[in-house]
Each structure stands twice: as structure tokens, then as C-alpha cells.
Amino acid sequence: MINLTLFKRELKASYKVFLIIFAVLMMYTGIITGMFDPKLGEVLEQFTQVMPELMSAFGMTNPGTTLIEFLASYLYGFLFLVFPMIFEIILANRLVARYVDQGSMAYLLASPLTRGKIILTQATVMWTSLGALIMLITLGEIGFAQLMFPGELDMMILFKMNIGLYVLHLAISGICFFASCISNEIKLSYSIGAGVPILFLLIQMLSNVGEKLEIFKYFTIFSLYPSSQIASGEKSAYGFMCILLMIALALYALGGYLFTKRDLPV
Image (cartoon, rainbow, N blue to C red; front, side):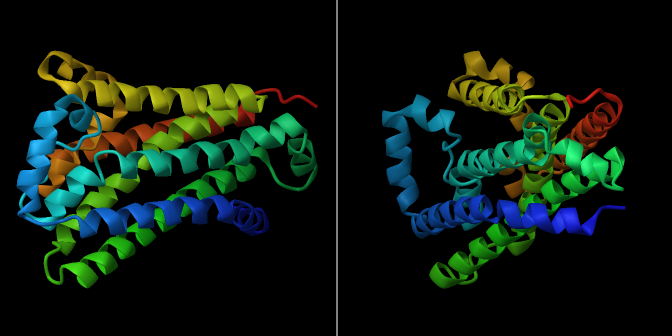
């Protein structure tokens, strides 16, 4: 079981960062949704031909013919990957490594709380915050779509895409949380927890540039979230989502286990 007092305190401490990330995502969601127009596809295709490498790197190569395909390319190809990742990096470091680095973890451990309960509570804060962020993103997408293009958005596919997005960010946050659990200093935690996801993102962008570099997609976790395949209804995408979930569970479990067993600085 988690400690509700600690859980509420952590949610309250992180709400400002949460709101900033959510506001930025909603701004881009509104702008991108407003750009949807089947006729605009020709213009975007011409733009892609002018700067193919740049557009490919950001996953914006196929505007599609439907609103959900358009969003899959222009929101889920980059923006919905980067900004939640920033939130996860910041939050993961605040939840564990900052306590250890500042010596505050000793005060938590001096209370009746066990290491296991502390780490489970902190992990639950991450899972809950991510779930709330993805849920609000979903509601925002539906709201903008209904306001600008009533009846154009395929709700079922949208829900599937965002379930996949949540699982992807569980895996990414697992990397950040694992790094936070094994680090005594915030600098080390950021180096691993931010460095690895950013490296994966850069590799993903590189793999999108052309066929010669496509092999790099096998070296990044982001390739396991094929938003375009989910949007087009390909069932193979669900297998990748299961792999992401297993990665997330393994990272959180291993990070929590190592935290409960390692020596902490006094």
C-alpha cells in the first residue's frame, strides 16, 4: 500500500510543472488540429519535398486523409513524445534522487515508512500524473476536434493511440525512475535519466531521415510506438505496446528493488 500523505504532498509539489507541460501541449494541439484540411495535404506534401530530411526527422511525412491520421503524424510523431518526456525527467528526479541528494530521505526513513512503501508511493505519483496528463490530452483533442471539425475524429482509434502513448511514457519514465533510484546525486540521475531518453529520441529522428539510416530504429524505444500503424488499424502495433509495458514494469521493479537494498548516504 502507498502512503497517502506522501502521495498528496508529491502531487501538490509537482502541479506547476504539470500545468506548464499541459498548457504547452494544448496550445500545440489546438494549432495542429486547426491546420487539418484534406486540401492542405498537397501543400504539406510540397513542403516535405522541399525539406524531406527535416520533416522526416520529426516524423511529419504523411499528413494522411483523415483527421486522426493527420494528428498521428503531426502530434504523435514528435510533440507528444518530447513534452511528456520532459515532465517525466523532472518528476522522476524530484521523487527519489533529490531526497537522497539533499539528505531529506533520512527524515522519511526515520518515520514509520519503509523503503518499499516510499518507493511504491513515489512510483504511483508518476503513474498517476502521467495518466492524468494523457487523459487531459485526450479530452483536449476531442474538444478541439469537435469545435473545429465536428464528427471527423475517430474516437476509438484516438483512445487506442493514447493508451499506447501512456504505455510508451510509462517505459520512458521507467528509465528516469530507475536512474533516480540508483543515484545519490541529482547530477548523476539527470545524466542517466535524461541522457538515455534523449539519446533514444535522437536515434529515432535519425532513423526517420532515410532508408540508409532506417536500421537505427532497432536501437530506440520510440520505435515501439508506431502511432501511424495504430491510426491505420494495424494489429501488429499492439504487440509493441505489450513489449513497452513489460519494459516499464521491469524498470520500475528493478529500480525499486535496488533502492531498497543499496546503502544510502547519511
